[in-house]
Amino acid sequence: MGRRPLIGLFPSYGTEEKQQTVYLRYVSAVEKTGGAPFVLPLTENTEVLTQMASLCDGVLFTGGDDMHPSLYGCCLHEHCGTLTPVRDRCETKFAEIYLKTGKPYLGICRGIQFLNVMYGGTLYQDIPAEYNRQSVHRQPKPYDVPFHKVRLTEGGRLAALLGKTEISVNSMHHQCVKKLGAGLAAEGFAEDGVLEAFSDPARAYGIAVQWHPEHLVGKDDEASLALFNSFVKTCEEAKRSLK
Image (cartoon, rainbow, N blue to C red):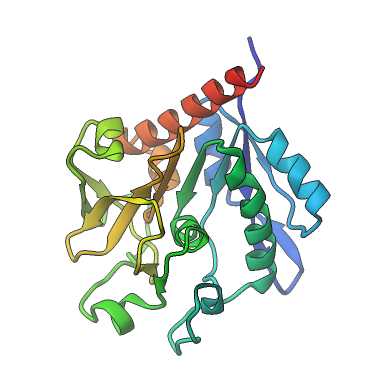
């Protein structure tokens, strides 16, 4: 059996204990679909980050705390959530290196927000306060059940990968994409108009989603499995092409 593609998982940062953490559901989803996950380091050391980017066959930009709005040219809103500048700095520095490699990525929740900012986009800091006070995107537990529908862009990359134009997703966020980053293509919207997915058409695989498919993979959700399978498969193909 050949080596599984190495998938780097970008971690969250715990300010109290100064620790980096990754939920096991991300690990399980990558393993279940054929990848070998490992946790990337929270460091600003360029040499280390360059080596990590080289090792990765793909990267999963995970969920987590809110980005500081100064990173997309905005002032701090009173309803912005918990901020972790350490993660912001380390993740930005890593992404600046990794995105230049052209290798695959998948973004989830904070991941779609972070990547949008890396492409020059902006965010709504709080959906009810800045977008639509009637919108609800934080479901109660359990999180492994659908909460709302997402309409996928007809003819889009994600619709083609999943073989559908509408899917049911879970929802655990209060921020979302405002202005879409340069070169990105909208791939899906919630019923209230919130952008829920985008892709980078210039990459072999660059997809980010606002919901949490890693929760649904454990329930054998068809669309979530298809998303992770397509990501890991492309990472495997990227690994072979670099031999």
